[in-house]
Image (tube, rainbow, N blue to C red; front, side, top):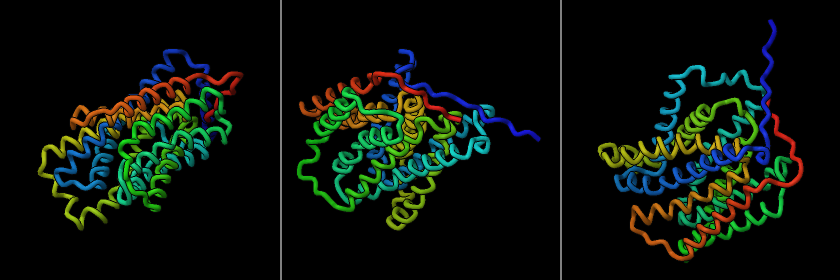
Length: 325
């Protein structure tokens, strides 16, 4: 019996994209960043009801995965049988799912070692790791605009986070975990750029959230069960509302938009645009929690915006397309 030949799909380099397609990619990434930015405020609501951090992430992942599985079940032809993928794509998909699942796990550990602001300041260095990984794989190259954009993004992040870092203590183990989290996010973005592109973003995200729920659930049983934070929140409507919105918006929608965007724009452009997340978090905290925005934070946001514009410029010269089979 003859075996069906795998479908070959060419992923065009970003410089050959139409303006409309590029704009769609930018909007998807900005939407993902702003959706992720809601998680700080939503988790705060859940924590005040007694929910532990590992439990919040577990329930959030379960809600997001369930929504996406339900969507896929309503349209059976919209998902791809994984056994139909070439072996290298199966391995790449597994690696991306593992990196994404480990991300929250190491972030939990980092938060337990040192201040959240310090953890995030280290974690959001991942755009540079993405750029280095993409260059090492020959998918992208450093240009003057891209290098300046990366430098500006780092400066903007320092301005946004700087006020929160004053007096924050450093912990060697916390630094290690935060660097590991940055590495996990960078690996996920680089791996997702031009592999397993025939698998719908919804299907990939459902798999990643499912894997993340298993890992976070194990941590929740080990950490939140003995302290009573595993179930004490169940009677709180505000906690349920927070975790349901976080699952639908900050898990399912955000991760689907992120994957769609990285497939369009590439890993480095996506990583820099994702720095809208801490900027969005500061703005949301100002609106929801009444925290003021300082002049340095505003300047940092504008700097990150400038960096995002710079890295969107295509590299000069002829670029070869990526080929996914």
